[in-house]
Length: 385
Image (cartoon, helix red, strand yellow):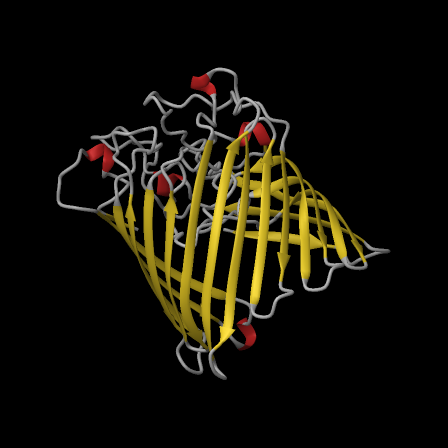
């Protein structure tokens, strides 16, 4: 697959942009056939094509960007379909086509060493789909898991919201320190706030100490999406998560140890259709969204071979989750697991400069030796991809 984009030069501050992405099937198994034991399809494979139509392997294309942008002295204002990257709404990872948004977005850099960005979004085109959805209809395009009482969630198509507003402030006014504040307001559903501080302090001429801390608070707004509890996205009042990161790096090595805690206050809910987890402990191919009472630990080690752009990275995470039989804490009935990620990247030089290659491998292990039912293991743990 690939993508094509055209963007005009600026004319009196105005620009137009349009792009489209497409995917072609080379060869795959029949993705409509569920696993014989669990009767569930493979969530990883279907996401490579169209999760709303597993039979579709030939018409996987979508108008992505279609915007008009106005550039002023120290910022810009963009209206239309576009790409943004924030802690709560972002491109996501690991697919041919990213998550897109529609609405109005601005970036302002008028304050010294401070960036302000934000806007109002009323459309979402989730990764792994070929359609655009209203903001409210996008909640529930992916699997909805379970309600807090254990019944199957029923908020897909039943969530009522006029859209979502985001604002972010990033300041580097303090030497070696980056401060971030982000707020996501989803009308009638929830409000999420993030505060994060990241330190990159020189130790000597070629190396740095890396440290960071983060806290995220979520509160229900309005009726949580619907007056009826079994059709409501936000069924609990609040959620709280915090984490930290510590590492060391130089020109060749990057090392870090990260921790994250989702408290038992409530399930951390953030529509998976909108982006990946903003946690320091995030590892590609899995998420901790939909969980409460979580302890997560991740160690990463990256190396760049001297005089090359060849970069292997290894990550290992331990994720202690609540019991799979407790839907009030575990929305998707995910067991505790360990995860190993191997990632090899190479940036071409010379004539192919700008082209990069990536080879990832992920293996997930079930925690503990106690056996659990196949529905909690197949396509969840004890697997590699």
